[in-house]
Image (cartoon, rainbow, N blue to C red):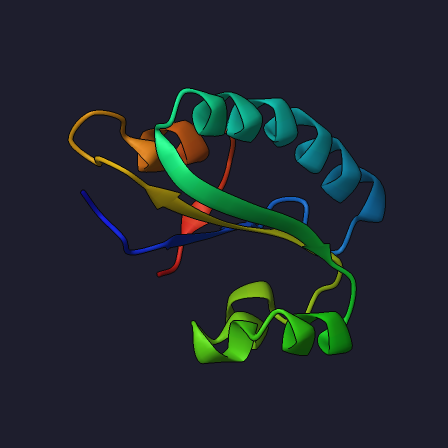
Length: 103
């Protein structure tokens, strides 16, 4: 059982509020399903609107989001905690939706 969270950013939509909203809407039911099936211990997904919201999420403690996103706001950030990475590949699920893992 893994208690380490995985941090993902959707870079393709960074800087485009409409695209970020679409990405979030697409991912929300997937995360809900994973949570309901108990494949993940929990998740957090937000559209980071600006530097203040990045600070509120404490992203600077996890990775250098400013370099990763080239300071383009908004961007979609997701943090998931898988129960058993051997059972379900959260990385594969997120990568097929265009997310890149950073922690």
